[in-house]
Image (cartoon, rainbow, N blue to C red):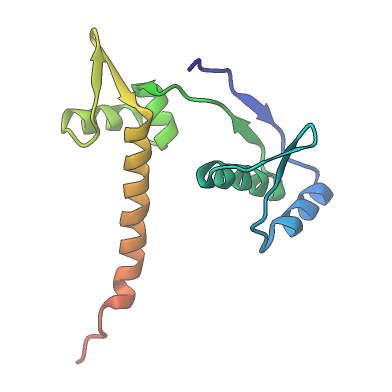
Length: 138
């Protein structure tokens, strides 16, 4: 799979953003038409499209890009929203699997996505933790 250059699109004008935001509120039926043909998206693809539209609905600028199955450490760090150094340290500790192409590290897209999913689960668990503890008695 080839890496295609990112495409940056400015945010929608406020009126258009408000209309899109209103259309997305509470809606779960996102239908994609290409040349009049309906296409059903996988749940992850649907979530990505809804996220993109939601960002436009908030008036945000958006960058869309593709990623290769095997990522450089710079690509993986950017995707994960962490520094290149932090990512390299995690690969050194074995927290994220890495493959070498000569002396260059490569990281599978699936490994970064799994790490991101785990970070979300950990965050949800941390947020739910205080609610689950009984109140301390004096």
